[in-house]
Figure 1 (cartoon, one colour):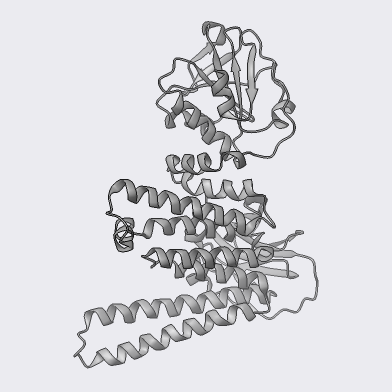
Figure 2 (cartoon, rainbow, N blue to C red):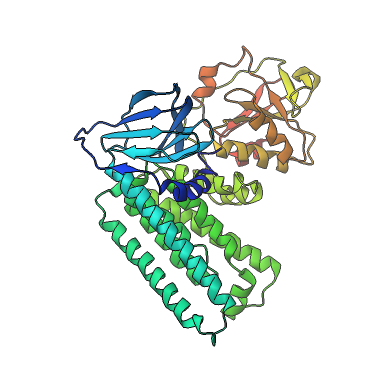
Length: 449
């Protein structure tokens, strides 16, 4: 989805373009958030806002050519304005009125009446220009020999540009716009981590990430930047040569098993660091879920399982009290293809049920873990989704060797009951669908089985 994994790819591409946006000084003293959008062409727009780690499509709409629309919203933070489903424009909302004018589709808009957005775009535009110069001089130096006459001149120019970038970065914490400043600082932190190679560099950067998030949570909470920091902190783990790190320690000879164990250890330490850093503002299970998603969303389910196994007691989604589900003697189930259907009275044996919520990453991974642990068992595993039986739930079947079954919600289970239930949740049924054991602890169910 654009506003998750692709968000900063889009921003990186657009900042260079948008640094050319025209800006005018503010003349508004209003404290309410208001966006006025006008266009010379027919456009469709979408505004995405953020709350904690969740994104929300605040509004979708259309604007006819040569017309304007004013949008009022009670929001203070980072937002994404997408035009015609293609062109995303970052915005900082919450400082009065923002006027945005579009002339042609794909051409940078004119943003007026918003000093914070002016600061935001101007800083990143200048930062991108300096970054381009750094790349140019660095590449030129690689081609030039140290004895060539241009070498000293190129080195001087490179040092000068790097110094300018550092001075710009130093000014950010002093900026009068704390939200824009925090978002820009986060992006610079990400960039600073791209070249790390050693465990010492990793640990230093991890601390910088978590300290920054802790100190600036109130400015970043309505943005995508907290998620971005967490994702990048785990990406950094893949930059390290663990064989070399083990051998340099001098304690032991490196092999693949020790390298994997060191990576696992660093991954779990990183997870704990994030839970500790954010616990004053974010419940530990919520922070844990974000760490797990960094791997699950990239298809690295085994690493997600390793994290959940290490923090099993915290891997629970918020929910009401446990309410008993009474199962009929027979109900319809389907296989992972979403087509092949059966009645449970065709299966005269014990069955294991896992309640799954699409919005609860722990329940989806619990379903996969259960499927893998029952790989050689003839006991059927049936998933009951909180919501609709959609493709994302059916896709869990592909993550297990064992065939999974899925129950379509029927009259025998109410939506209210599933809405109020804990996730993940495990239920063991006998051959006639009577409940033998129901628990949110897999090990308890396994013992009863």
